[in-house]
Image (cartoon, rainbow, N blue to C red; front, side, top):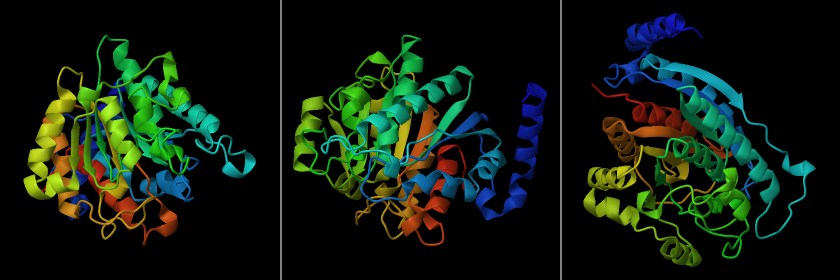
Length: 334
């Protein structure tokens, strides 16, 4: 797309947004971005199938149009190719399909680097949460080449910091944060040949409420201290938690990657997720968190994972995913 075409598309989106219903009311005040959507329909990292259809469900829910209505210029980069489980062997039981997951994450990482090199903001649509090992690696690699580091906001019901040695299931979608922090699995940790991808002091967990006993030890082992549970949100409020989280992730960094697992939200509002856990963030708490991220303006990239249309209700979870992405990219009530 030429610069002139980009400007025309941006102008059109900004002038037509208010005609598209109440969701679109109010054009964002943040500078418009050039966004590339990257689908990673990976479901090899989980026991329950179906999240491979998540990227399609989010697209069907109108993500591109809603971001364009906010003034952004959006390009859909299509999907990263993913192996089909039925055509592969599981491999080691303590890290199932690790070879295939590493291959997919490496391709995703390379696409993220290319996207950033072209001056675009990557928005990754998962798939299970193991895709984060690729997306975060790509962002970290791009900024490492500029002698900068990145922060990570991990918004999830789970800490995903198991290793093959500690995992009770062997499902790799419970291991990406461990890999990014330089633990195991080694093949995921060493994408681009270096590790760790993020420093523990710039890594923040928000809204966790289901952590394995071994993961608690891994959190300590990795040196992560900024961990906000749902109790912290209950007692202190979402604004206080998010302000502290963004300060920690942004301290001494170029900005931060936001990794949002839809199971962070209570199943009442997001029933179609890979691993639902009661007691999550409410609809408005989730929007407030995204709105605060937009207000700070330091988000480098964004991903949303674990949307499972197979167990969803009329695509409710994908619809909510689109709403939350819109809030993270500047959609305001007024």
